[in-house]
Length: 127
Image (cartoon, rainbow, N blue to C red; front, side, top):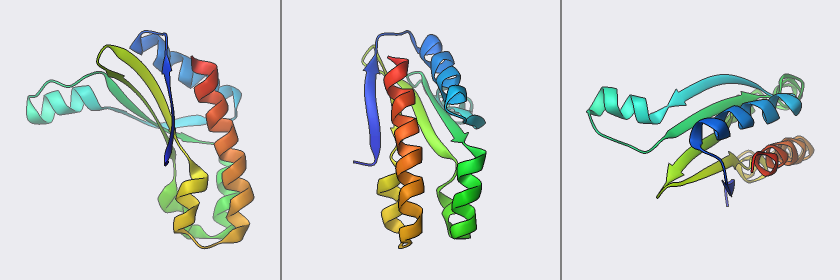
């Protein structure tokens, strides 16, 4: 499983705002924000459900990981998505421990575990 997902009892816009709030409490900033619905409409003139990708970064932990191996930058920032599927709102965060299996560097494991715990806390606190 490469993501940690929960259905939340919030409308889409409120869920996005709450995820951003909870990320900040865990030391993350949002570096990128991709509105997939708007992009699909603009680029393909097609309709799509509400779907946003937030690229989140915890600078101290990212810096520590980059000091171990710069290749880990390809896995940054940590993506969290908020989306609507069949009328239900979901929040899903990437699981860094799974992604770190792609980089054979044991020193990254404790950092991945720490980041993952924070991201799971954000997902859990949103709903």
